[in-house]
Length: 217
Image 1 (cartoon, rainbow, N blue to C red):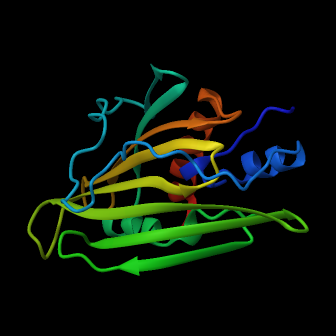
Image 2 (cartoon, one colour; image 1 turned 180 degrees about the vertical axis):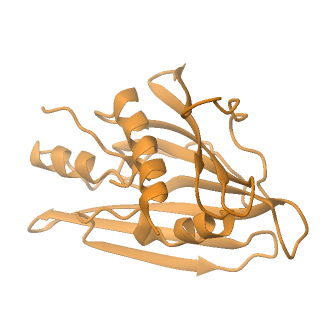
Image 3 (tube, rainbow, N blue to C red; image 1 turned 90 degrees about the horizontal axis):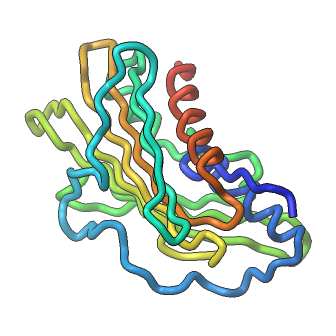
């Protein structure tokens, strides 16, 4: 089987993974097994799963490792030459992260007094006739610092909650912090256990998102 390179939040949304596995003849009717959740969104999540690494004096800061049992984690931190509110707006729009190979994406917006926004995002890929690959992610956007009317930092938390068992574990955080009117510090942390998905794939995904946010108007 060829190596799979999903980019999770990396903007491929695991599409390369699921299409390649489908092509290899894997069954898709098996739901993922029950497991402990990364987050309890009944409370306000303002602390990332892993503390941010220090910002680099030049370029982007990076760290990666493994928790065991095949679960990998990646940290990436860099600066974006945009107002923090603009970066937040781009991340609130899931088309920013949608891969063209996703045949259907449904965003269900939920209300919560604890969060700026709560989204349940359902993805469907149809690589072949009669083959449908589905999974759902929950996203929560919390103001973390500053006055309620003008926050200066936000913690975005996401995790896969339903769907294909080939994405066994997938969750992470994005932390935005206002540096100035035109500069935003962005920290990403992601952990996953996905078939045919390694550290290089995960690192590439996070770097692609950072690069895309820097490029978008």
